[in-house]
Length: 411
Image 1 (cartoon, one colour):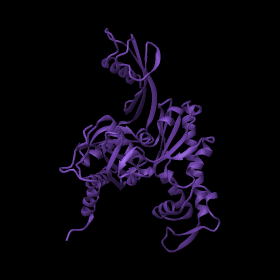
Image 2: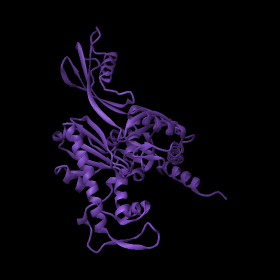
Image 3: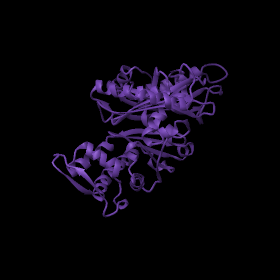
Image 4: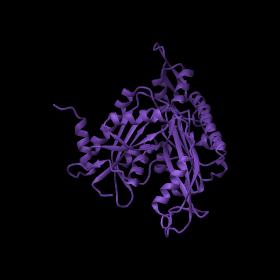
C-alpha cells in the first residue's frame, strides 16, 4: 500500500465509540496517527436505541481522530457485536473446472456453496465470514488452493450471523456521521487481530472482550477461528450491582469502580475505604473497598461461567491450551485475570493490549482501544484505503501541535 494513504476503524460500543486512523508501513506495522474516543449515547447492549444520539457519538469520535491525524476519513471498517450474534462452521464443495489447476472462480464457487449451507431465518443475515481452510481431493490443511492440481475443492467457512435490522442501524449511524462503511467486522475477530499472537492461535486460545453491555468471545484453534459468540453481561452490569447494593447513582458507582475498585477481595486491605455520595443526595458515607470487591467478584464469576458454558456447548473447550486473553474496559479491574483463570479451570489468563504498532502507541496502549486498532489493522491488511493523505506531509510533532491548536479557544 502506498505510504500516502491511510486506513480507519470505528468501534461502536455500548459505553464508548473509538475511532482509529493509521498509516500502513512497509515493515507491516501500522502507524497510529489519529485516535478519537467519545462516550456512547443511544446504545444498549450493543444495540442502537436512539439513532440520533448514537450518530452524534460516532461523529464526535470520528472528528477527534480526523483532527488529530489531519485527514478526512471517507470510509472505515466498522465493528459489529451484541447478544444477537451467533456463528456456525459450515463446509462447501465444488468440482474443479476443466483445466490444469484450481482457479479463483473455483474458490469462489466453493465459498458460495458454504454460504448457501448457513441456516438463515428471514430476520438474519451473514455479517462476517472467515475461510478456515481448504481441501483438494480430500487432502485438508490447504491454505491457498489456487494453482494446485485436483478435481474436487472443499472449503470450511466460519460464518457469523446477526439480526439484519440491528446491523443496518449500526451502519446507518456511521453513514449519518459522514463515514461510509467499507466492511462490517465482528468485533472479537477485530480485537483478536490486535492482541493475540500467532503462537496462541496455533495452540488454541480464548479471547474474552469484556465490553459495557456484552462480553464478546472468540476461540482460535490450529491457527484459525473456531467459534464466536457474545454473552449478555458486561461492565455496566458490574456498575449496576455496585449502585444497587451501595444505594448510589450509576455515575457515582462507575467512578468508584474505575478509580478505586479491585475484583478480588484478597487484593484489598481490611482498612481501605472510599467516600461515596448516596443516591438521595442528602449525605455521603465511607464504604469499605473489600465490600466493593465482594460485590464485583460474583458478577465476573458469572460472566466467565457463561463463557465457559458457551464454549463447552460448541464442543471445543478441551482443545484450548494457550489460555485466555482478556480485553475491553471490563478487563481493567485488578484481579479480573485471576478470576477468569479460576473459572476456566486454571487456564493461564492475561490482559491483552494492541501490538504491532508505531506512531501514537501510548495513546492506544490500553485494552479499551484493542477493537478499534484491530479494525484498522484488518483494513490495512485488506488494502481498504479510507482516503488520501493530508495536503502536506506532517510529522507526529506537527500533528500534536495542530490538534492542540484546534482545542484552544480562539480570541
